Length: 251
Ligand SMILES: Cc1cc2nc3c(=O)[nH]c(=O)nc-3n(C[C@H](O)[C@H](O)[C@H](O)COP(=O)(O)OP(=O)(O)OC[C@H]3O[C@@H](n4cnc5c(N)ncnc54)[C@H](O)[C@@H]3O)c2cc1C
Image (cartoon, rainbow, N blue to C red; front, top):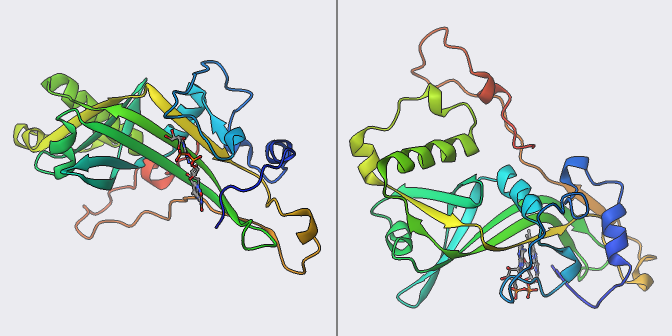
């Protein structure tokens, strides 16, 4: 699928005013300019630059709706891109994992890292194969991570990671013990050098293709929670908590 192609000056207008867009999905390009941020040469979106969003609040909204990221780093000359979960507090991302994992072992050496978060909002079907696309909101953060060593800060980072993914769960579950804490590494990545990119709206076909006889439009995609399934060994009569019954990522 082609993500970017010859410049279309009208594209920006079309994208921002397309009525299909869910209100909570509007990128906030105009309404969330509270903390404008100047991208670095490394984080300036090159293709389809009008989709680049360099506003901290808009990036936070994307980061807060997601909880899965891909962590890219190079170890012994080989790039690895590892999927994992994350949490955000203020201008920091936190990731955690087994202290023995390659990702955690490498990153705590303060090597350059790239964390990417993607929310997929739809498949965009154009008349031409070339102009098919996807609607999405994504964030890329570059930097170096630091090991969270202080026991109190580590526990707090784990709590906020848990609360980021499933608000309300931390206090309901058994707290980590000393051995579990020792087996777990937590890393903090400051959200300093970042970019967001947002595509919303309809297909943008070449003018001569609008008469091509095929269906065109958007197939919306979103993550929805199903009905919770009781564990086989659940105590009789134990109610499903509200945070599980009504789980949603919508902000
Ligand atoms: C679900 C999805 C599907 C996509 N499908 C395609 C596809 O099929 N083909 C295609 O070419 N592109 C696709 N893209 C767009 C792709 O992510 C890049 O934006 C694209 O490759 C253009 O990169 P570039 O050469 O302009 O920038 P690069 O030189 O690669 O990047 C420069 C800087 O721009 C920023 N940046 C670039 N892309 C993004 C992004 N998506 N989110 C946040 N920051 C970003 C980063 O800070 C990066 O360091 C897709 C994106 C998503 C999220």
